[in-house]
Length: 171
Image (cartoon, rainbow, N blue to C red; front, side, top):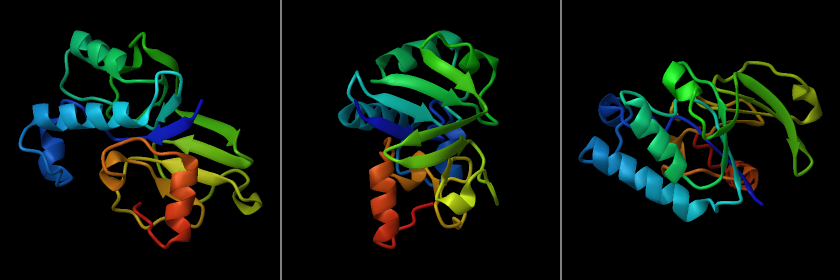
């Protein structure tokens, strides 16, 4: 099992195309591309932590169907655009506004929002977040995992850390 992270998919959100300069001709094309890239990356047995803003302007049945089609066991860290229908979807393994975990020997603080400081920051822990759509300069050991910064697909912690070592800081 591999653990992945993503954020700010904004499935169904027409405004996301213009606001975040997404390279898709329509919402349907955007949603289909993100679904395909997710499923090409994530296997059904993998785990995905979605760091908020899953879908907007979608009916509950459409959101449910979409979540069912996305591979992996999915957790939602709530974002500012996750309404009651998104939070209530039966396909989430868990739903919470904040989570701490250790993965591959690295402590992680997960939230939709970037922090200026976080628990165990001085002990090597990372803050993984969304919300800023790749527009916020990160602090050391901080990464925006929104799809706009990561080719519209989930990524692993190792990918994030390798990108930072190469000087690529998409967040």
